[in-house]
Amino acid sequence: MKAGSEPKATTRRVRHPERVILFYVSNQTFAIAAEAVQEIRSTDSLAGSAIEIEKSELAKVRHALERGHHTYYVVNACLHFQLPVTRPALVLILRQLRVAVLVDRIDRMAELSAVYALPEAFAGEERGWYRGLAYLDDTVIPVINPAGFVSREDLASLDRSRGAGIAPSELERAVRS
Image 1 (tube, rainbow, N blue to C red):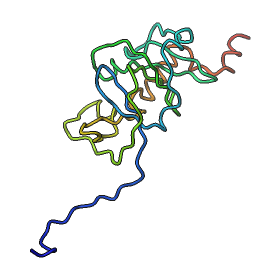
Image 2 (image 1 turned 60 degrees about the vertical axis):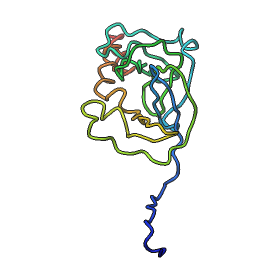
Image 3 (image 1 turned 180 degrees about the vertical axis):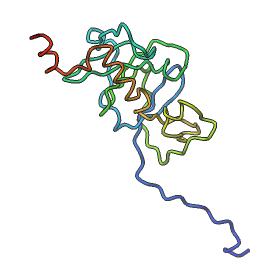
Image 4 (image 1 turned 135 degrees about the horizontal axis):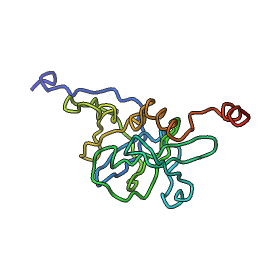
């Protein structure tokens, strides 16, 4: 048998592995880029600092957190992904977004060698929820698009509903008038 007649293994050039956080929501595993998460906190530690949003147009957002000079809107991941509602134990505060996400638990950190494009079976709003799919430990795991939790329009609406869309200088002028 000639060496040339053997099937050639296709090699895929692998970029630097991506570090992700694997977490659970309603017994479903998800991955999010570790660099997209600023902080992970217990929901108990945030109980006193969460502000209830009375007139939220988004059912998945019922609370806001004031951290430093930023307002983070808290997304219930069960409602976002349309999964059975559980009692989340942790909140992922996202980096460079004004969003915090309630999750059940963290599994571990892992490295992904590749994120594959979503199949066409993913249609509608879930195409914005995910960056793609990853294969890890004989399991296919959806990789979250952090910007898919709340759109810019929804953030503006949430700001208006809380009165946070008004600049402090405008508030000062309104009080003086």
